[in-house]
Length: 93
Image 1 (cartoon, one colour):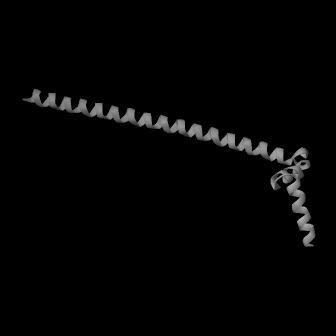
Image 2 (tube, rainbow, N blue to C red; image 1 turned 60 degrees about the vertical axis):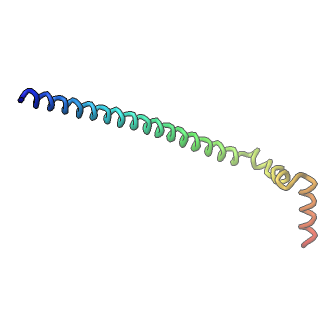
Image 3 (cartoon, helix red, strand yellow; image 1 turned 180 degrees about the vertical axis):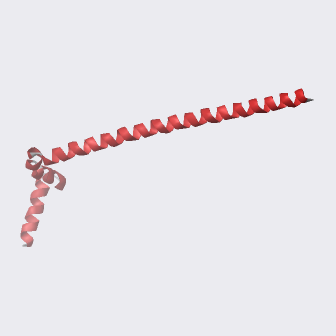
């Protein structure tokens, strides 16, 4: 009888150990997944910061400032459209 109870206790303990080991393995997999996501996020944030610095440097450059009128004309729809808009504004004065 005592041997039977001891075997049951051993079996129950082994089952608990197996469940605990599975839970630990699941937790480790989840941690590794989260760690990888965090590292990806950090790398993306660094890349964004780098690109923001590159953009700021470009916009502060002399060539960017000198070509501003050309970009404006392009935005307005081309040189003829820009001339038309300027003439219209001048007539209003």
